[in-house]
Amino acid sequence: MGRAILILGILLTIAGIGGMVYGMIAMTGQVAGTIQTATSPNAAELCRPDETLEEATGASEYSPTSGWGRQVSYFCVNSKGERREVTGQFVGGMFEQVFGSFGGFALPMIGGGVMTVGILLTVVGAIFGRRRPSPFADIQYPAMSPSEGYGAWSSPPNANLTERLRQVEAARQAGLISYEEYKRLRQEILDAMQ
Image 1 (cartoon, one colour):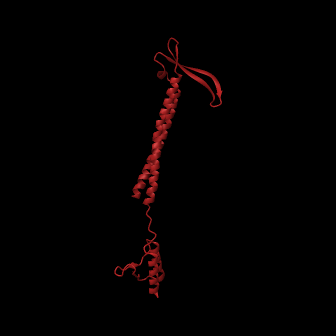
Image 2 (image 1 turned 60 degrees about the vertical axis):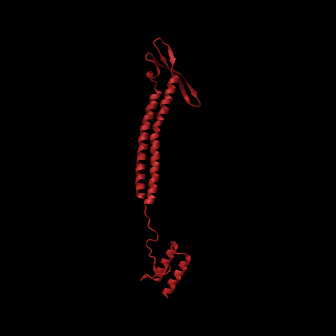
Image 3 (image 1 turned 90 degrees about the vertical axis):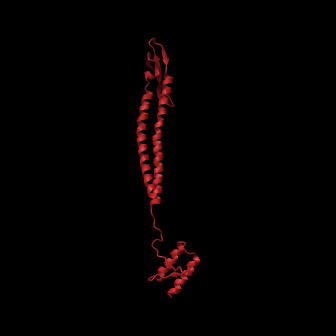
């Protein structure tokens, strides 16, 4: 189970990174193209077929909040020389195009979410997939004789006093026997060795 979670996490992390990279590249190109298009007025979009687009630039002025700049106005002029101001229409269209391009942020954001889930699953899979042996795996506990009851332990043939006492202590620490049983078994081992 842990290994499957780990593999799924790695795959999601890779897919998330790929989605983020692709989305960032596509978004950068889309935003740059949108800004270029939005900041360059197009006569076909603003004026009627019989009109041309004219630009009127004001004098350069300084503002403490925005620095140096000049006011630009756009007019559609017909064949009779009549002017119709379209600056507001151009600015409204520009903001619509620029802010409309922010939908491209969705793919990198989704990719980031997928990557985050993938990293979490990878960590969880690594934790659950790691097999840790029991700290008592290599301890040989004394055999219990079923006919004599729970407290009667049979002696291993080559066990010395120290080893048998360690085994009983390990059984107590593992929660296999109570402290009272530990004391009784310890005394039995000591009595049997005399």
